[in-house]
Image (cartoon, rainbow, N blue to C red):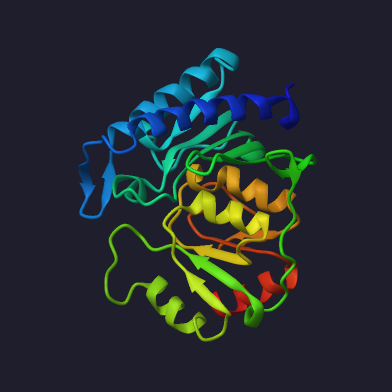
Length: 259
């Protein structure tokens, strides 16, 4: 049975292939709407095809679950599965905002064993294997260690279509005065990677998908951060809500304010 460490090079090769496609398509995409403010582009599809080809070459019997695969949300977490977001931050990409990434992770029975988040703009590769630590390139990652909201730089996610009274807006108004600063960047996998790297101290979201969080959640965990699905004790890939923080004390405080 393959380990996370053994499959990490496949994650890296696949993410690199997807990143090359995004770089090739940057500035020449034609967006077509899949929602009023949420786009799918030729770049998404080209990246996913490249990633899938790499995974199929190495692990042909494994299940592939990608953002552009039209997978039902209630899929079972059984056996070997690859969770892929070929373009995390699609709207940023379409508008030329350089905050987007490729996210590739592999899990066995719902437990993520290896993952990579690749930022092709900055050529930064965040990676982790279970029990093997997290890295940015060859440098070992560790969180900032921030312990209180008052010292924390936080990020949060909004849905693609925001309505008055959405809980995320209420949470933003509630937490903004309590933390050092609050940001919304529009790419969940990069947000999680930044928590692992100490660039952010915490992050929360209510409406993620398995492919958004699979790689980033492991990277946070292996960097020494605290992370869990909404109201749970650990990460469940089919749970759309997530909280992550640089330390257990900060995570506890963040959850008390949110839950």
